[in-house]
Amino acid sequence: MCHFTQRSSTFSFSKICNIFWRFHHTSTSHLCSCSKTISDEKYQDPFQLGRKDLKNLYEDIKKELLVSAAELKEMCDYYFDGKGKAFRPMIVVLMARACNIHHNNSKEVQASQRSVAIIAEMIHTASLVHDDVIDDADFRRGKRTLNQIWGERKAVLAGDFILSAASVALARIGNTTIISVLTQVIEDLVRGEFLQLGSKENENERFAHYLEKTFKKTASLIANSCKAVSILGCPDPKVHEIAYQYGKNVGIAFQLIDDVLDFTSCADHLGKPTAADIKLGLATGPVLFACRQFPEMNAMIMRRFSKPGDVERAWKYVLQSDGVQQTTYLAQRYCHAATREIRKLRPSPEREALVHLTEMVLMRDK
Figure 1: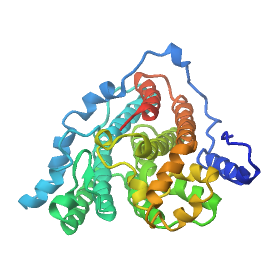
Figure 2: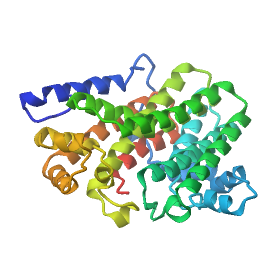
Figure 3: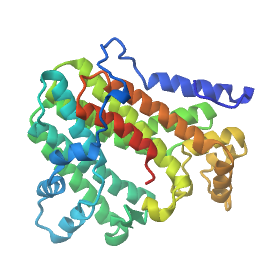
């Protein structure tokens, strides 16, 4: 169970955390585990292992975005400058290799699996462009956002165009199951955005609402992309579930740490302003945990930190509470769940790289 301070008023909050922990971890324990202890395995750098399959990734994305209008092309190329971490494509190609090896010891990534990695990055980037318009954000990845340079209307259209190009690339794979899996991501992104626009009055419902939003806006893309490459590489539905569960858990942990960094990382290092979520009226994990210790935050959460001084007071309460630590601890639980899942696959360098990647998610500082 989550470790919470022993106060009767917080029992229901602890209970809802564990209910949603169980909900997010449908058991696949009936599968045979092929795990070894971590000490038995050679350290594997995910970025080094994935580099071969991600070579020319951004050039290939730009080929998908061929357009005659010079301004639209400039906008579409803006974030595909090769300076991103390519975190999602890297997970996808490593999962593809791990599943291929598990199935028939094939050590090559299929062209269709690599296409899924490209599509995942395109969907992700289109969602960032739209998010920045909704949030009226000024900076992303250390540089000005599309909406600040070209305006909101053109930014929305650029995001739409990237999404449409991703859809064309998806159709080209020619597999209706893969199309169904990845279009679920787009639906989840929209539903997640609507969840973010709303809020819950009840404390327990509020945390459940936050976790559901986190899954739909962040983890669904990783989970379903991992599932898609597993389907392309292996016919076993049990393997598809392992890939999905790994992606889901890593994705949720990634966003939980992102929410922590909003309170602990400086703006220059993060590449975007800190306290951004509170300023947008959003109550993330650190805030929700802090609210248990400072119930006066409830009123601020319900009015979305709209009164003068709300943002500053909420910031202070979070730093005085154990909200950051509890959110980090919850992220650790999701990472441990991801590790348990991926260790059910046959041992391989890619599998161990995916294990190590969960540690990188927890240790990242931007």
